[in-house]
Length: 308
Image (cartoon, rainbow, N blue to C red; front, side, top):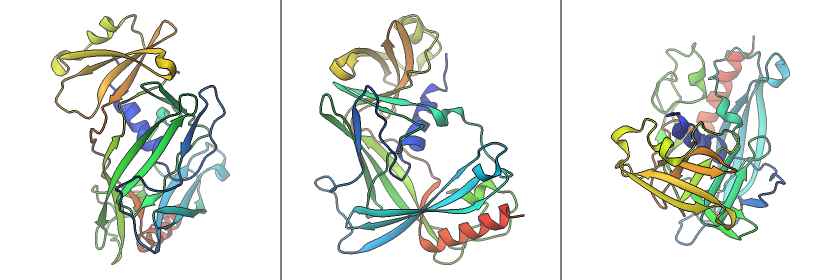
């Protein structure tokens, strides 16, 4: 039993779906689209009559090619709940000497399945960006253009004061946590970041990677493969475009936020994750967005660490 499958696909949400920036929609047979602009949903309070900025960081390791190893800072300009524009700046190109977790799930193509709904996120081409509504609530909507069904994902944020906090703190980690020579350094006065404190779906949804078939030959094999007493319930339904896939999910572990799922496709079974409608799932405590004071400090420290 692949007990890590739930966490792997759940991680795919934070990696693939909460990335900021507009990528090209993949032109595949799913004929689906994402919406990362427009007005906030009804009832969402937005920042009134002003423009504010927030910063994010990303990095890439391209093997032995030094030019492919870099840290990038992204500046987002937001007005009245709409993303006006974003600017990417390469802070420094390095030699890959900073620490990197070996995570093959970064290249996972995740498919979202619901009632007559289907959307595939191509990890090589797509990046779903979202506008920021006052940096308190962040929405994106994905749409199956064939069925015309849409599903929204919501993330709630909390502002964290980084003033005077050690840069090597394990609480609310930042990009500086990748480096080991930041001991005895502290963030300057006024530094702040935002963390994700909860997320939920507007409709019940399955996440599955159709590139990774399981070893199971039936739902019974899957259910009996090692979950033990954690899940006492089993429910089945049809999902996807025209509800063409048979899906099963285990329930009743008490969490009400996510459950193991199994999707049948072409006589094979694929493990996935099921998220009930409106169920709130805790997000990462790591910093996700930064104000200018924090971003400038982080950028300078990255340069010091990587420029030899």
